[in-house]
Image 1 (cartoon, rainbow, N blue to C red):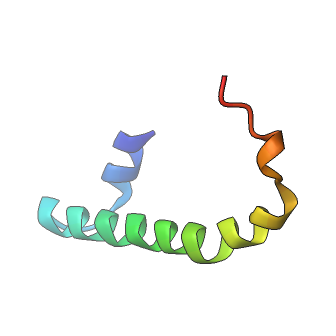
Image 2 (cartoon, rainbow, N blue to C red; image 1 turned 120 degrees about the vertical axis):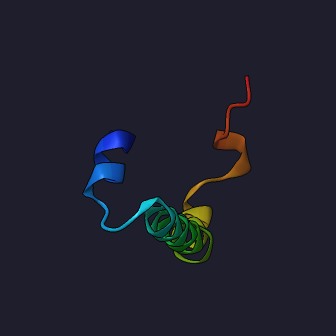
Image 3 (cartoon, rainbow, N blue to C red; image 1 turned 90 degrees about the horizontal axis):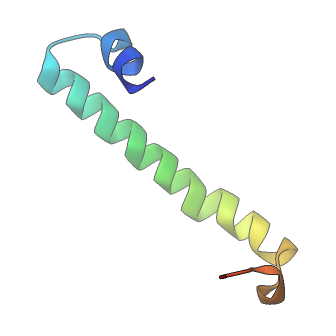
Length: 51
C-alpha cells in the first residue's frame, strides 16, 4: 500500500517526501482538532478497556 502511494506521487524522491510529510501533518491536524474533540463526548473513560 505504501509503495503504491510512493509511486503515485509526482517528482523526485525529495518532493515525494515533502508531499508525504505535508499529508501526514494535515491528517494529524484533522484528527487532533476536528475528529478527537467530536468523538470525546461520545466516549466515557469507563468505556475504555486498557487490558
